[in-house]
Figure 1 (spheres, rainbow, N blue to C red):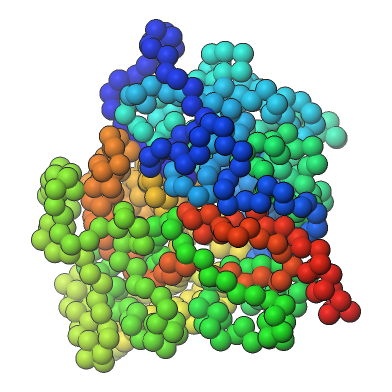
Figure 2 (cartoon, rainbow, N blue to C red):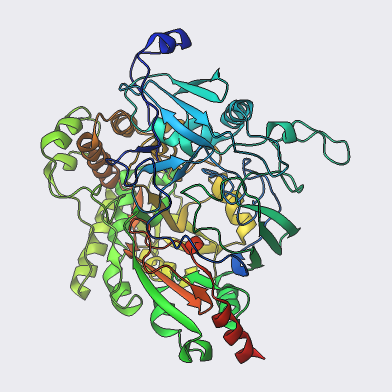
Length: 622
């Protein structure tokens, strides 16, 4: 996942025609040469002879009421791209290119069998695979691609920002489509155009079985036509969805699909919350594997009978595919959070060290970057190319950006915590607050400082509670508001919160256009954007453009370091913690390749059902 933008030369179709024709490529990569050549047969981590069959059981939390993920209303079903962030096609829709799972920023052919672009990255063209077809047998056409792009860019806030610099989509050959960019120099755009989901124009423009006009701009409960390895078999809205493998899937023999998508069915059962989902997993038959987000549960609660007898297995895989920020995200649209001193005071009140020792078994690392755990994380003092980039926004950013390394406060002793709380009180006083009868109030308005943390899980109290206790020591009225999944999604999309209690923001190792959706002024007031903090900062906007227009990897890393540093020193977030491992627990019914992809750590779609193991499990449950 990545993106890009800015410069000053536009190129029309006539100029494209007269330019020297670039060579067709089988892959694109933002991080070097693609790992596999044009004649590769399959990823080297898969078993090309993996048997097909069986059912993969999954649990999803919350509910769903919509089968159109390309609108911000409602909640889309598991297996579809997530509502509000529909990058890629999920299980249903194929994309032009397929993202590799064993190399960062690399895509290989899927709906498009080849891709070409010039050295200045001013346009990209794709040649469609003649075998590509929809589940109804109709071919996937250039017209489908153009209609999908134009329609989704117009109606979907994320796509509108993500593909902001793509000015034209046109048919330039029988199976050829060319996308023209507003500016040259955006290395990422040719790559991320491959992530675009292709939708069936003929199906969406036809009436439904009742003669009603279909509308891609509205939620739907009608099962849509797709092109991917799976199709929706049945739906019980709010409760379950079953996907079935398409036996004659057009791409099943392509290198990116061989040895994958081995389950005949994928079933999602919906549970109210994380506690209910955990009980469902332990019961068996409802969730065959789970990524374990709770270190406390990982360390303490895997002592149930099925685990003790070996029916459930735990495995840890290294996580190399992400930088990440996880934190308490502060909504700066609220007047009380516009003062940077208030935001910094909140960071002083967060005691990570005590939580790490008492709750996290000292297994987590403190987040110290918006790209934590990757080479994109800033550190030390800026120098070289990064310093040169930062000089372009000097005077628009906190001076500490240039003079101090960003470090979170440390509360490793009782005295250190007391000192941090005193620093918080000092900042709040400077921001115009004073303590009256145990309550912190604004000296101008007389209003008390209140903070509501928005949560989506009853277990949030465990991790938000200690932070709220420290805030109350300062005189802040801090409360947690847990809501159900539908309310949570609606309130997040509408930016209706003070602080998001626990929110992770994953970053690819090749950042680009998506940074606009995260941090730019243009998305701060766009419902459904991922600019959760409401950042409107001209310096941040300029640094995003530096990332998008970076000429090479070294410049991209330097620009990302600069952005990271400026975001940190503006205290938009109280950073939390992270684990650079993927923790998986699974019922012992699977066959697995000997190795898993290095980049993402684990690819469950390369697993298969081992019938002997599955029968043994069933026998023990009888």
